[in-house]
Image: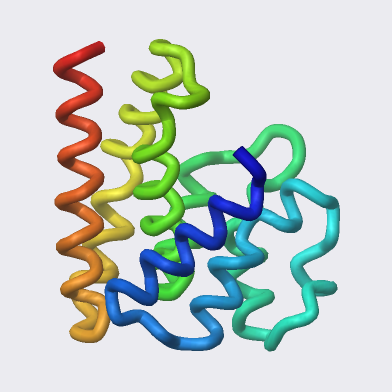
Length: 149
C-alpha cells in the first residue's frame, strides 16, 4: 500500500470526527515525514505549531526512552490527538503487515501508553467525543486481534 494512504486516511478520519483545525491536519499529514525521509521537523513547510507537533511525534534515532517519548507527547494535546489517530489507523491495518508476535507487542505498547494520552484528550471538551470514538475503535480491534491470535 502506498505510504500516502496512511496520512490521508488519518486526515479523513480527523475530519470525519469533526476535527478541522488546519494545524492539526497539517501535523497529521506530516507526522511521519521526519522519521521516514530525514527532513528535520523544523524544516517542514508548515507553521511552528505543526512543526512542534511533528517533532514530538518523531522518535529519536538510536536508543531512547519510550516513557520519555510518550510523556513529552502527553504535554501537547494536539500531539496526543495525532498520535491516537495514528495508532488507531495502524491498529486497523496491522493484520496486513505485522507478524503475530509484532501484533502482540504493538497491542501491549498501546495498552501501556495510550490510556495516558486519552486521559489528556478527555479533559478537553472539543476532543472528548473524538477520544471516545477512537478508544472504542481501538478497543474493538485489540479485542478481536487478541481473541483470534
